[in-house]
Amino acid sequence: MIQSMTGFGKAAKQLEDKKISIELKSLNSKNLDLNARMPNQYREKEILLRNKIAKSLVRGKVDFSLYVDVTGSTSSSIINTTVVEGYINQLKVLGTASEGELLNIAMRLPDTLSTVKEEVEDFEFKLIASLLDEALEDLNKHRLDEGIVLEKDFKLRIENIASLLEEVIRIDPERVEGIKSRIQKHIADLKEKVDENRFEQELIYYIEKLDITEEKVRLKNHLDYFSENLNSSDSNGKKLGFIAQEIGREINTIGSKSNFAPMQQLVVQMKDELEKIKEQLLNVL
Image 1 (tube, rainbow, N blue to C red):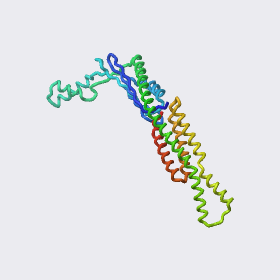
Image 2 (cartoon, rainbow, N blue to C red):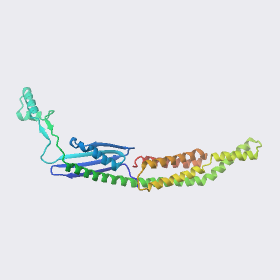
Image 3 (spheres, rainbow, N blue to C red):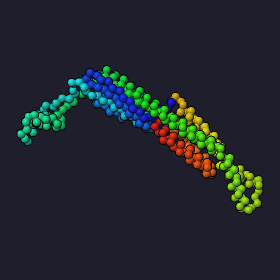
Image 4 (cartoon, rainbow, N blue to C red):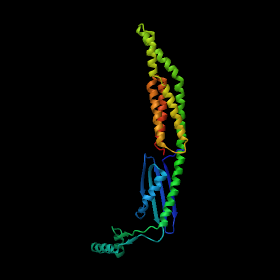
């Protein structure tokens, strides 16, 4: 079953003094492009978290966010009293504000607070890893749901191309007869006596150059192969992309050889359906 590269997942846990939340967002990309945002004290485990994400998501432009909101009374910031007192002494020289007003002004100035780096305990990292697993599971579910929608659209487009191919096969004898008739008319207009054997040989050679039997067979095989891979257990957007390229090659060859307006119109419709497939394939894992 195919999967989309688009998805969103989240997980959160409320502890006694803080709330830990994880959010994951994934969009389409040729490779894995992972952007991680987290508080500095958690960076020591960033590589482990990145590896876990890469193993699960494989491809896509992924935004990973780790939020830690302190909800208890503990704080990692302390007041730089020396800096604050220095600001207040300087402000006193400039005006006659009260001590409370001076303190209020000073606290809004740079470097009045220092952040103490907290040691993160192992149990908290284990909790984060567990929350990441939940968020990944949530995101992959979104990817599967999106994949079901994409799969239905692919099947519709492939069926449409197959129907157009059947129409190409149906009108092909009419095309060949038209080519023969045009050649014979041109010869007649020349009012020249021609060697019948040589004429037949040239006619056969010309029709063989415009023959699309092999292209019709290969196109049918490529369409079947695309459908077969849609139903496989793995999601391989790159492989489906390669098959779509082969489908396009056969459609283009039929168009260049057809030399018959009704068939060329069918080719244009097949190209339109294939273009829609290619656009959607950009979002397939």
